[in-house]
Amino acid sequence: MHHNSSKRIVIFASGTGSNAQAIINHFTDRQDVEVSHVLSNNLDAGVLEMAEQKGVPTYSFTRNELYKSKEVLEFLKSIDPDLLVLAGFMWIIPENIIKAFPNKIINIHPSLLPKYGGKGMFGDHVHRAVLANAEAESGISIHYVNEHYDEGELIAQYKVSIDTGEREETLVEKIKTLEHSNYPKVIDQLLFPKNS
Ligand code: GRF
Image 1 (cartoon, helix red, strand yellow):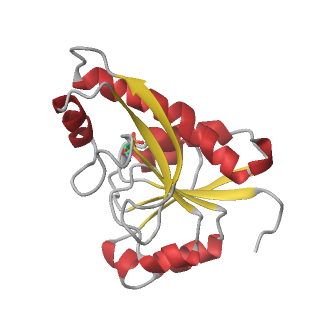
Image 2: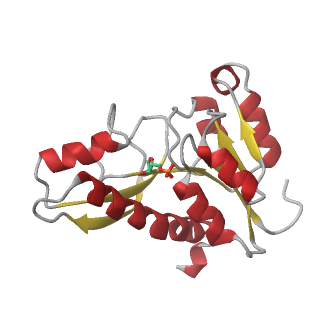
């Protein structure tokens, strides 16, 4: 039930929320897109404080509210978002939410999937593995989230080259920069396909 023509997105995040921040910044001053809520499983997550400072409403939930009681599902239905954006969200999205929002849930992963994805491949583990394997390049993947963990359709990938002797810290910085400049743009294009 949309009461006006603007698009609504929600962001799921568990941590610092630098991607959430980039997305919120991208859509500030936009009349046609509303970042409706930042949702988190983690009450202590920096992303909640950031969102509050930016005037974006927050919603936190427990494991039970996500997986058992359908609280989160009902909350999302009441918002009726056009897109559910995962940005450093550390829990699996349950099937009832995936079914309720087909092709409307996206995630960002800090590697060139299918490489360095799947179980245990999050945060610094990804970059360490990439460097340990002496890869010449890495990058980011933006993909749909479906019932099959890490098998959702790819939407976009962006690459960075890895220098000889590249350190983990600098690789992390390159990847973050790539994420912050591209995730908001891809979201924008998904919301307004004609602009592409
Ligand atoms: C990002 O690197 C993202 O690719 C991964 O988790 C990280 C989240 O960072 N899924 P932040 O909380 O947005 O700073």
